[in-house]
Image (cartoon, rainbow, N blue to C red; front, side, top):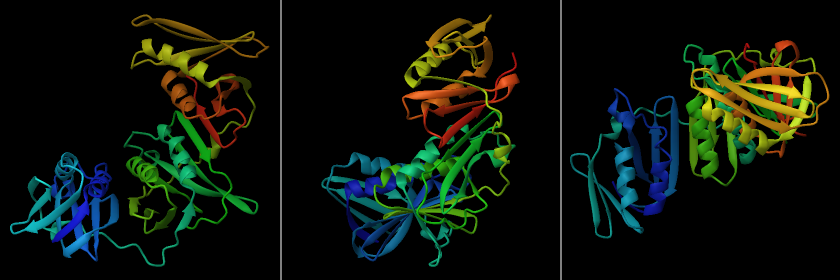
Length: 373
């Protein structure tokens, strides 16, 4: 194997793999990336078995070949060499020599034959064009609610489905950890998505890699489902994520049907108030009490072992005094992803769930359960 490639191109390609390769594994090969020089291009492949990234770049290939090397080490090497054209050559004993100007590195590798086999994407796989910004928004506004509880695998990912709306349809992403529920949907789609009629559950790590791919590719992005995999394709990259084989809870049953007490306030004011409260809250108890009074919402926290904190926000409210307690971190996370200037807060009656939305935006909601007082 012998090829030349711009240093920045190679650096970009290797950097994309760093979130996928396994840091702690009994299989050393999963720490490596597979480099394949062929047909005047370089293919870089990384996998942890559950997630696979295949990325392609143009290269001047004088001898075809392949080898696997440590993703972390080769990234550090390429990062430190000067800009210019990098010459990469495989030598005997499965070593890779990387040189640019006067900088030369030599790194040991593992034969490509030991790398896990990667199934090719079907030629007839139906991939649907998806708006990059729309898919990014779906992930950003639901990811915080994904559960970390491995004993409930169906909650350790976000549920993605298509919902028909007359002649159009929308993509919906839902996440819950049992204490809060985030639901976000796209604007109406121009085409029908295939393979999403029953919905799929994309695992946490897969969501992170999809978001990274969307941020790094400015062109058109395509999405499809095949053989238990979610496939996301751009001009340079193909990302395959193994789906969680489980049934997602019926989230629609959690959405309150009865209207609660609705108040509105500026996003920045509530954010700063919650952050000030959060400074003094302990890891074991992060409950903030929201009390509605005449044209005022009082946020307070009290813990005999930690201390006290309080803040006030002016609102338009006329009614009896109401007090509810919430996990301050859940409240914060739900508000932080809102784009609108004002936040609508619907407090459930009789200790029922409350709803947080961006004012005038029905495409996002976060439902949070109140704490027992």
